[in-house]
Image (cartoon, rainbow, N blue to C red; front, side, top):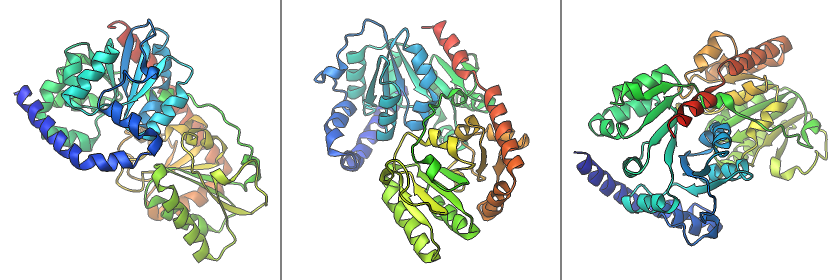
Amino acid sequence: MQTAFLVIYTLLYLIGLIFLFPFEYFKRPPNIRKRWLLEKMGFFAKSSSYSNTDSKPKIWIHAVSVGEVLAISSFVKALSKDYEIIISTITDTGQRVAFERFKNYPVKIIYLPFDTPCAIRRTINFFKPKALILVETELWPNLIFFSSKKFPVFIVNGRLSEKSYKGYKKLKIFIKPLLRKIHSIYVQEETYKDRFINLGAEKERIYTTGNMKFDIEIKEITFEWENSIPKPIILAGSTHEPEEEIITDIFIKLNINGTLIITPRHPERFERVENVIKNKITLSQREIYFSKLSEIKTSLNIKPSTMILLVDRMGILSSLYRMCDIAIIGGSFIPHGGQNPLEPAYWKKSFICGPHMNNFPFIEEFIKEQACIMTEKELLDKRILELINNNSLRNSIGLKAYEIFKKKSGATERTLNHLKAIL
């Protein structure tokens, strides 16, 4: 049955690839298209940057995008002491962050090959890894099937959102044998453990080790311009459409002096978000200074009382949270599931999120301990004003968030201890 499933899956995958390939190819900058195509097809030998000169055994880690790369930073650095690491991502932003994070470590960064037998086998035969580690929920059938025939496959920082769980449950007859190919699964929460078991994973091979995102390391970056922008600072992080419009409207309506920093989740939306903000400012007829981060060299040439700053640069959001007074978590005011709230907690900052935080079940503890504010978008303006006018409340929320953050750390070490006993 599994063979039939893989054949059908591969055929459907190839059909989908025919339609999606032109979009995926041309959406990338011309200078990386050739490398993207070769790596997606499993060809690496022609590039000297992939030469196998390191004498250490290799481990292949797949982290789909930025969030997963950041979550495993400490994990990768620890493993790289004994292994050469191959990190594959799917997104270009994931690539950029991985290159920056691990440039001083024995780590090679590649695009995940197409999930076809030929591309996967070529990649395995070239790198000859000792193990494959999948981050969170990356159940690629051919990748898991052909890898498991050669070496053990693991899932670390595992999670199964309710949406993913319901989808996989409909295919349980095919997912169960796939999960049985995985040597061990290390999950963030007991909820995820139960979901993996219900899909057919063996209970004895699943361990609740915690969330590696609590083990993040954030480099403190001082920005030359940070003291020249008006205070207080409200930072909306990893926003999605139409959250920028909602938050900009509220900032303008509140008529407060200060700065709103907006950081869209996806770089391809920078221009659209810029137009939205400029139109809002024009319609408001208020004196609000607008700038993109790329336009600020050292400090502002003027001293505005109110400002909106669009961050058109990737990879610095976690450091930007340090300077804010209030953080707003993007992806939580729409049915997306929310973005990572741990970065403001790391800096002891109070944060507000919307009701759609189902990607982060631990948020319930933050709410229970009054370590954050969850609100509907209709009440967001009142919650922002409440925090602006109450310094002690802001500080209290930030400190409580930090205490939870520290208490729940240690997942990386626990996962590493399990793996070292196996590898």
